[in-house]
Length: 272
Image 1 (cartoon, rainbow, N blue to C red):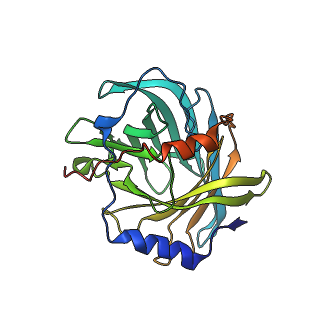
Image 2: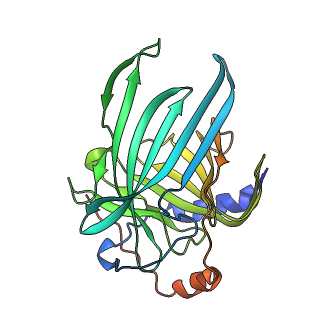
């Protein structure tokens, strides 16, 4: 059971930021020295695996979908930065429909940058036979005018709106709004998660694409509500954590958040 702040308060937060375009974080100010900085809401620990699954019944009968996220270690060097690669396999039933290698990098103060993705989409016929593959929505920062964004800011303040990726030439313009912080979420079979961050994700390329994502400190993504209606409710699919990969939370995390508020730098939105 998800018990966030009241819907009216959340909508007020959204409306208050809707008049301004999301900011594009300024990558030129980010520092990437050898560091042990960890963002508790988006830890990047090699070898960890997280599985989120959705099940239900629709007009065609029972269905299941799942996403398997595996941190496979060092990835491509992008814009001079050594990234961490996370392999994301998406299944519909037993069919692999998308395999993506996402590239992330955590800067010296804990912002996690989204540096690009290599995507393979698998297309099947009605009988489940593979017809073709394509790489639609793949992008790499520094190529075709693409710029990195944040997948998770170091200071996730309610109302903060930002680009996660800025690659118009590759149809990749996802953005996020920190919808709520400090929430409590219960997932059947796993228990209660505290201090959960909720982000609302969307894209100008598809106004109908709306979703909430829920992140727990020390774990990362624990739930995703996809296909929200215009009232930010009634999701078509709800993915929940079925296999967590906990990561230790730094003891000084609360103090770190307070200290970073004064030093966080965000660039104004750039045009592609």
